[in-house]
Amino acid sequence: MKINSVVIAALASMLFGVTSTQASPVSYFDFASWSGAVSGTTTVTIPDPAPDEFTYIGTGSASVIYGGVTFSTNLTLGDGYFYNIGTLYSDGDPAVLSSQGEDTGVANILITLAAPVTALSLSFGTFDGSDVTFALSNGGSVLKGSTATGYVVSDFFGVTDSTPFTSILLTSSDPVLNLNNIDFGSAVSAIPEPATWAMMVLGFAGVGFMACRRKSKPALRLA
Image (cartoon, rainbow, N blue to C red; front, top):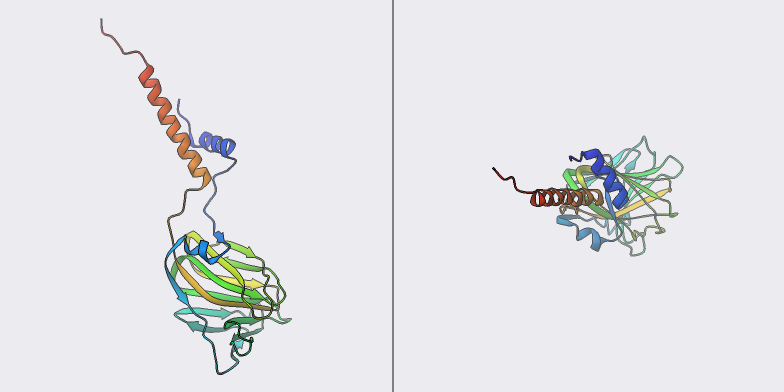
């Protein structure tokens, strides 16, 4: 008896409570767990503009490049201000890039990499604790809450994806969105999803069942 793929998927769903789905971003809660799933990481540091308190990058559509990575804001999302805030202005907190939308739309920062990657992480924060959406250029999206206040970037975002991406767009309804140093690299080969494991188990079981049937079948004797 042959078991087609539809039946296998249905059995997997019943046995393991899962369904076959396309790959999607995997989100991490801290740097240690993220870095454990990534190899060959590169770090880009947001520089401290000291002895100045901050550097004004621009208004509306503005951009700056650090370590070969482009950080930009978009006028169509919000006609706000883009700054590099230094430690002198933030009372000793790490330097950050800050999109300040005010009442002119949503705060936004687009991170554009020089080449595709499958993993990226950063520290972020907002002034009023609003959620931040991270939209990957491969179509994936992650929503993260923010607990930080002021220019503190104590919230962590880390993601891996089997599909490479070249940019991530951060947006928030908060009047101020900040980000700190970013790390990126290649995700280690992912552990098979539960549905994949289910199909593998069913496949092995089917092979074993057929082997047992052949073994138990009486040998044909010639007269």
